[in-house]
Length: 276
Image (tube, rainbow, N blue to C red):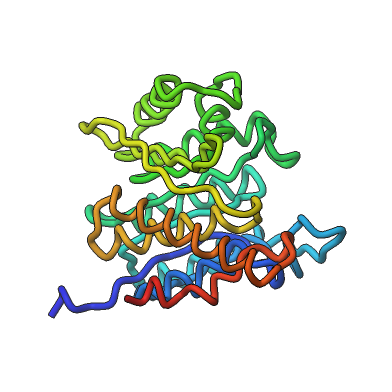
């Protein structure tokens, strides 16, 4: 039966061998949720860039040939997810990928990894920011942090946005075309808020208790749980609650085991939560 067919997500992101981020977390997290994860690597790194040095191999020139085989073989996907994209050319390749593979019921989640703490990443030029705005038009769900929401909407960043100001940011992103925006990682003293705003619905602020230290890879984990949950039929709000709870559990366990901060979170210890 079609309803019993296992779901598939095409996950477009870099592969960092060490440090628990990008495809290194997306593949096991999505798989634990009984969804097949089909990676499209954008680059290969020995470890993420939060360490003092790393090996880096840009995969841009090989992406079209890789994707062409998927087209030739007639592959299809229930979800398409995008993570860090390192160049204007990669954003254009991914935009074309979505145009080709997106069907009426395909869940498209764009995580616009552009910056943090009020600053764009060094690789993100103004031209790349413009390209990302175009990519967002093809998304069903967009998951920016506050910095990325400001970059997408050309808003001056503040660490103390009111809920009204954050809602205004989400409205502006909704006007770009997606059906839902989740502004993630809003810090409020001892709480972390995620703003869920869907087309035609009132915005909802979801809150979890803040624990431990800020760690790399948590955004990748959050987006992976949201994407797999929605592909499996959960509502966006349900998916966001589940993702927030899972990330908190991972951080708590990492603190207990005294995992070094650059090593991310030991999500492996918590996967049983997603398998229930």
